[in-house]
Length: 323
Image (cartoon, rainbow, N blue to C red):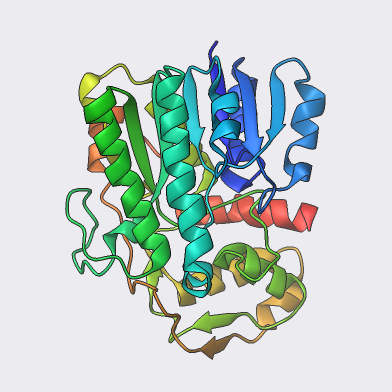
């Protein structure tokens, strides 16, 4: 049993991670300012684990909040961030404040509290304009958005802190994570919940570009497995580095919509006939994303259980029952 802090624990990934850790008997503290997270994600957990789960409402941009949150903590899972490439293009200053200053605050607080290991959400956006496929951890290009810059800076800071202060860090480069509790609402909703919501309402989803851009869509349970392995590994070669966190298979946006229509039409046959529309390509988007996951397999013994299509069926079922 460990004392664990999850920043951004009211969000999509953070709340799923909290649920898994609590179920394994750990004591969990969550730090969240509810800028994008939702209390609804935590209420069932607060009710089920009243002794093991505590919530601290606070902001990672405030160093005092970070220091309070890390007191007595063994492991930090840093999930708090302002996601979305378009949001960072519209408002780069706030993205930088949260994703860089907030990250640095959490590193300093974790160092000062003698945290055993700092595991953080990195991003596949770090690969930038690198054209090589599949993406291998030590070959990156130039970032294509303010968001991508912030996530790359996180990796640089983590590396410097591990070398300078001896704190163990592991970065997980998430590739298009999806699954239960991912919010379909708001201006910056991720593509899968957004398309699901549209299709369920018999409205046309809009694909950016011709639909042949591809992504390594990664189901939430594979991501939870990676986080647990990053916490539990005792292999000294496995720490102070970054890992692709993905399934290792790519799907075009056109294929994605077809799968969604197929799976959703099992619940509502009219969805099969919903028309798909196309719009312009989005600024800052990389054309193709596909992860090489050999490093995680070798050093962390990562073994993803859900293919994209298996995960999509699970996600569709959850949305149908909860939207």
